[in-house]
Length: 258
Image 1 (cartoon, helix red, strand yellow):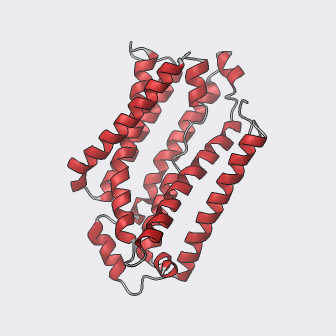
Image 2: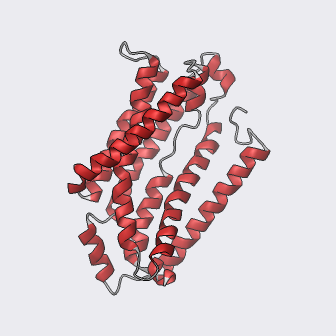
Image 3: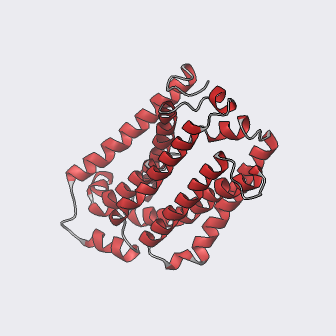
């Protein structure tokens, strides 16, 4: 039943979008180091950013439930992706010391924490879609598989973020010396990568009705699509595990500061 499920175009096409989109959400892995080393954020300030992020994540979920739920899934993703690009580019201003009279902490609170508000908006449509993909009789196993695909893409994205630290010198020593050119370039690059996820939005059904029509198409099955879907999922998990182990046993292997 699981194999038949992943072979259906109604499954591998939208989940393919979820995977591609999430894997492109590559963050700047040196950002926290920049806040600590250059802007001298204290542990309390960093914790405050984390708390604000969780609150805004919840508010994002509520915003979708009471307002954005009327929008098509494609529109939600296009809007939030572009908005995320704007907030990500604000980090460049903070790196350059342009905060429009605001303290660096308040400015960081806006451009950093609001990214979680956007993630909150995207959370419900993705979850709703995955629920509707589950076949009768194997709902638990199917939903677990879909969430694994979703989470493996995020994990792989984080692993890629670590590898990208070696593109430019963003080590602690370089940042503290006042050279933030690498930090600026890395932030711009990761922002463009994140926004590029919108290019795949046509893989996503507009609504639950569009998803149902894909399910109803008896010619939408593809064993090749199902095989690719499962292979990429397992390889992503394996790669993320390997990078995680290397980060533990050989810190700095990717060129980042230890």
